[in-house]
Length: 326
Ligand code: TRP
Ligand code: SF4
Image (cartoon, rainbow, N blue to C red; front, side):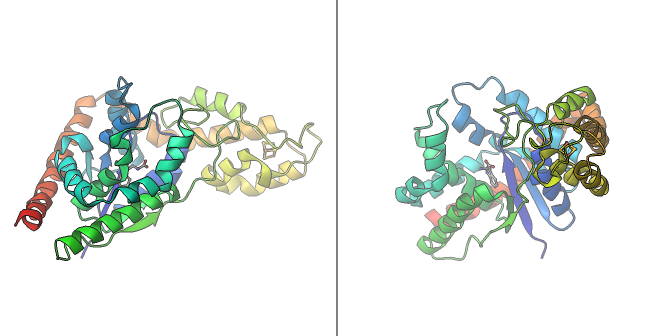
């Protein structure tokens, strides 16, 4: 039987090349073999951004545009906004009742975020329960497979534990096990050599214009040991080379030779890379432009996606209520 895939992303800002090679390309490929359900998880965004919600609405639409432009296909997959399907919160409630507090308090992601994110107050009831809502997302569609990055593995483990506890308490094999499909962690760093992140503003966004791409690539940090044109460089230690491998692998051999042979300078090397990235993103950029000009089309897709998702979600909730209350 064809398996169901579920995944979600928080609408908290522009998508960049890291999202493309890390997640979206896997999402698009999975459409060939699975029934895919992809959700813009705005309740999860709200957990972090509740004090400053002004951008969430625009970010949702922007995320939908990016997904569609990258090849998420609403004819084959269900694409929807989490808050439009209220059953996510219903199932979250049921699962909250049976999730031991200790599981959430011990969650490594939770502890890490509390430590690292100081700009916002995350000492809230909802944020502690973040993984319970994530479990509800996945279990509502009885997904067998969840494409996620490595950082999300603890959350998937919690989902499985919550599912098993539900089955144990209500004495039935209701939720089946779900497994992670690990999406490649992108080895691409930001322009400044730090982790790619929207808060550092150091990434090439899917919506960047060719001019912006040229400017950003020009600012990329290169092998620090190559100061003069005549100094041989070390492509394996240069972030520019990682981008070549991802977006222009057919030139990788050339780069190794001109860099370690000191026959071409970093400025030219980056110029060629910028052109390659602009070319690589061309179809995405063109589709993006078209979609941006037809927002009612995008809105329709989200409306239809919510209806489709809701049918599945309601069916599961009927069974859940029956399992819980008889
Ligand atoms: N927590 C995920 C992230 O930050 C987003 C998410 C929410 C998710 N619900 C999900 C991912 C369900 C996979 C499945 O990346
Ligand atoms: Fe990096 Fe290219 Fe310069 Fe080599 S030539 S150090 S790969 S930018």
